[in-house]
Length: 528
Image (cartoon, rainbow, N blue to C red; front, side):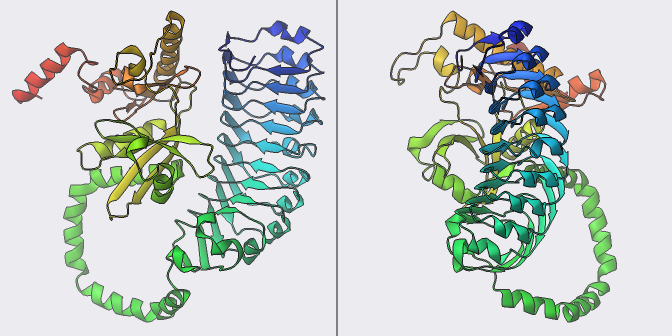
């Protein structure tokens, strides 16, 4: 019953289907908690509830499914700690719990399930603490993804026991220290992503000896010389961006020669003494000038620092080169549409399977940068089935030396709602929405707004909800997008202050005309 647009809740009576061996309800509109009675299905071998709207904690009764081989619960709103009882599923081969809101530490008993041989995916959750050393029990696993959580401390050397591992992603965590030398035992590894952590030390030479086809070490604190052998001879297979203390490597990486860095360190002591003597003479006048400048720019500076921190640390980052390749040079053929602050292009990432929508900001337009920050700020801590998912951001310099900023979203195959509601002479074919489809879309949008207004710690006001900002996927599920005018209203702010801080936002035609005209009158008379 996958992708049949079934909605509602799973009845508790499902536990009476004792002979059931396979249950697939993937990509529907099911919601609510997963029934505790589902644990009675002790003969179940495959359970797929992915891409729905289930919420609440996982029932501990799932541990009764001792014959279960495949468990897929990805892309829901499940939360809380993982029940340790999952460790009783000793026949499990593949476990996917990604894109949920699970928190707490990863139970050692669960990652120690030696039966898992295909994949363990816990990415895009809120797990904290360390990676359990018991993960070394996964000696047969091929794919391990713990990316985009809040895992800290060191990468455990016990990973070297996972001798069948082919793909390992620890991207987007808080991991520290050096890459353990024990990982040299992973001779079957073809993809390794350790980007966006706090890893340091030299890049181990053993990485060049592995069979790696893709290596991402970007946005860490690695130091020293980049190897020139093996994978490191192919710049398209490696990513080292954001490691400012690297040197050497192949010329295409455009890193400084290591000799310059060494020489710089030798001379740093004498240079420091000279600089101190030169600077000390004018320090008093400089402090006075800086005091005036700081007082003038304090507010702007604080905002810019907050914005920069948000954009750099919260999302996966793609380079300008990645997006240029994905969109075929931002070609006209891939142009989906244009708006007030920029244009949107369809693209395909290097894996050839992931379609994306790339929103390129026109930074010349007043308010474009503010729109970029507002969208990042609104989407950084929220996740809902009916909100367009922000996959990545790009802050870079294009090949002409201009600032480049873009937002990368999931691509929705059926475009925006306005294309389905209004006639378009240039549109090939005939589009029609049934009454049921229109009702489903309205319900989807209502779910999204309810979540924005009441489902987070702070109320989020979209500010520009209209048909062209509602996107439809291949199953005609609706998603609210374009948060460029969004406003976050703190729950701690009194109501009268919150409402007044929002102001008049949005597009004419979607804001009451009387309000818009009244505000224009007040502005013309300098009353506001």
